[in-house]
Length: 248
Image (cartoon, rainbow, N blue to C red; front, top):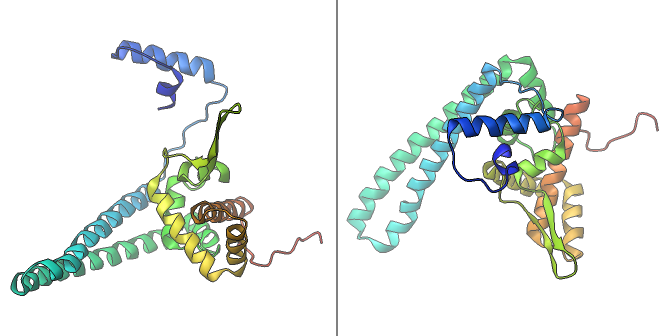
């Protein structure tokens, strides 16, 4: 994607042309390139299990909708049959999610590096097991993405300006080029942090009082969660709710 966007407007495509474009990009940007680090097998397993978990949850939601809708529009006999079948499917999906969660927990406990990173990440209020696991997988154990600002951009919670001169000046907006799954999870974690962390709740209320929109403040809380996780991972320490400087 980076190579394609760096070329500007192009016409035509074949293997020989693609090879030349890749070689030209490498020649121009070789000083900024980073060596690719493949994921360990245990991280690949986590990634596959998370994808399976998402499919279970999506299927479960698809069966839960008819239960709510059919009672209002269909006859009782038909509605009763559909609800009974849907509930059985929901139970199956729920058991599937529980089994996947157990497999994920077992993999993490069996690996020292993963276990340490998960312990650090989940020490941040609002970051649970699911969010932490997704962060570990998407960052390749915090090796591919080491900066919290880059991960906020990757997650779609970092605002960007849109202005030119005096004629074009819009509000800062997040980019749609993002991992929407991570963004959804972070929003859920941010709402949890607002509920259980007095500091985050105070920050949220203060920003709303300043006239900020609830959605932009929620993104700001997401940024706080991301920065806390990355700093703690970098320093290899548990998050401290009441941090005291060692030099103080």
